[in-house]
Length: 321
Image 1: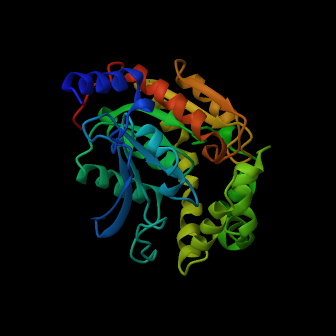
Image 2: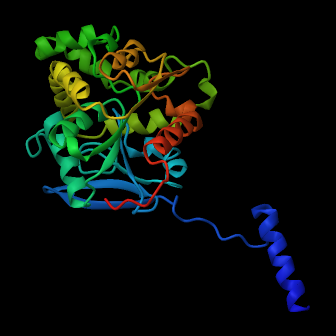
């Protein structure tokens, strides 16, 4: 074939777009990789994807899940951003030392994750806070306000108004833990593990049963009852910290996106709306979903995040961490 003909054919395929290309080169930046490292003597597992010279988004998971809960979100964000999603000590693939060897408090979890970010030389980031990830993230933010570039909150509570009815029973456990073992029994039960996903949804068919089966299997491992009981008891320190977190938000005014499963019975929709008092410029979106909103609103939440991040980094320039 005449070289000019070959060249014209190649140019035609390029102009026609990727659907016409014979062998398009796939992008690898959104491919998730899996890592373990030791932080303060504890093995920490984390997922990573995206270009390392792009702005970083740190995804902080909730109870009783792990970074696996972000497995469908990560590839959608990693086409443009560097994404890190760690497992907290006691969760997922990270080590779960006994409470005698590791103090399971939110202060300690936050310190470990903060040390992980420092070890990875990630010193500028957007934090995504969900459930237990919220009190961990707030502690990191208060310790290093200069490192936070933007904030994304998904059913991550910081207001008394956001606490659903079940928290009255948990408050009784805080007041006298030995008198209320039934609270821990219910908290760690299979029914509660399943209900955390399905409560508030009108589309149960989009929820993967493996999610709660795997979470309950994890909670049933030796030592997990002691670990999770310690964290449930320590959660009272988060509620006591709400006023300090709110004051921090009012003072620093980080660019903030709130995406909230509005049918969550644990962290109710009022908790999303309450952010407006301290962050009047925040984007707040109430979604028709429950606590694990990503289970059924993954694409919608990803689109909201990408639009929000584009406003923070309009030219999307490479940014060294």
